[in-house]
Amino acid sequence: MEYKVLRKQYLAKMCFVCGVDNESGLKTKYYVLEKQRVLGVFEGQDIHQSFPSRMHGGIIAALLDEAVGRALQIDEPHSWAVTIDLRVKYHKPVPLNQTLYVVGWINSNQKIFDGEGYIMDENHVILASCQAKYMRQTVEKIVGEYDFNEDLAPDTETLEIERIDLPR
Image: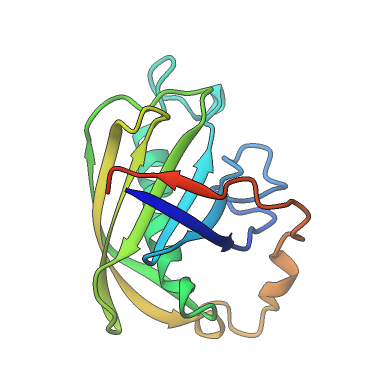
């Protein structure tokens, strides 16, 4: 099914998954798609490996968790999804040094809600998937008095993707 890209999502400076200044991070770029989906585009490097040429399973889980959690912010930009339960299924090895995609969405909209996601390669093969449960909280409740806006990275890039075909 083809999805239209609606806009980019914010990035942070030092987040492991999306941080633009984190030398060890994945530097994942996030986009809001129609039908309440979030798309992340990333490329794992050798520093992210477990077995040679394969991404570490914990990093795969972090990518899935971030994508599903970010889906809450499509309609609620000042809310964060705090993970309660994350169940990951590893279908195939996730390769390094190639462009990959992570997709996330939420299935319900209560204080505690469920979501799903998957990682796919450029051939639309699903490499890993997840089902998760989150609790909705405001940014202020999580970071307190800390000015989270200082951690946001400036948005200097143009929209790189206009449409994308996804398996689900």
